[in-house]
Image 1 (cartoon, rainbow, N blue to C red):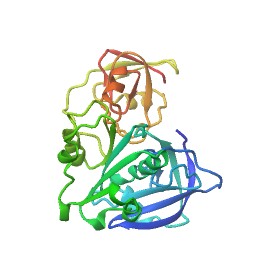
Image 2: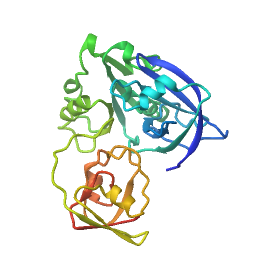
Image 3: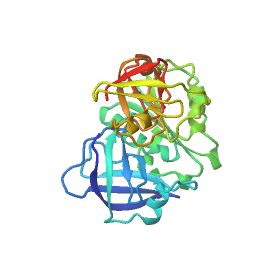
Length: 313
């Protein structure tokens, strides 16, 4: 991950009720780092707040990045700052891009988006188009006026189905996914209720058919944790993680630097290679197959099933 890139706000544009898009250009000129559909960046605001936003500009575009930001009523300060104070010409820092929601080749795709969850899907659609592959989008929102990037998406005609819930109800996911199509991969981003309904709707599909990106981590039952010893192979240190600490916090306290951002298991910044031991995966990134490999973990939330882990840090 690239850290500390200076950017300048070039343009802000209203995309829907409560949603603005922001164009970020490199403040020093030149090109921004390459990225692929599904990638996101960390936006570091002058207040010190750091938030993740999906890139939603043209695929391969490096002269600028585009993000979409919805103003959240219960904002912790990130979206509120963007909407209330961000202005063209303002300089910021970003980190990334980073991709834990990468689009992989398939025969065809069904994309499912809810509200601002459309942002990582837009570049995926463009990529599928460039590959000449078949695709369909099911796009839901509270109202038509709250759904961003409608004009861009309407240009695709019948491939896009819109479901404003105040007029048409929610996306009929069970109906759309009743018939299994093994050649189809499903990519989805949106609110937790939509993703949970989608998981139920495709439970009879082959494993690996569905790829999700979440806004927030899933709630999990609270279980007592036990201390674990972490051997840091690269730095030569050994750190004991107490039952009330995360591995990330303990590593930081022991002087071992691990990149981090969300600290909730959804952004991927703290991915760490596992050399020995068995992780207790608690992230919302890895698939079941990837978890079974036990060769990497996200130390901000995950712990250990064994008394000791050896990590490549």
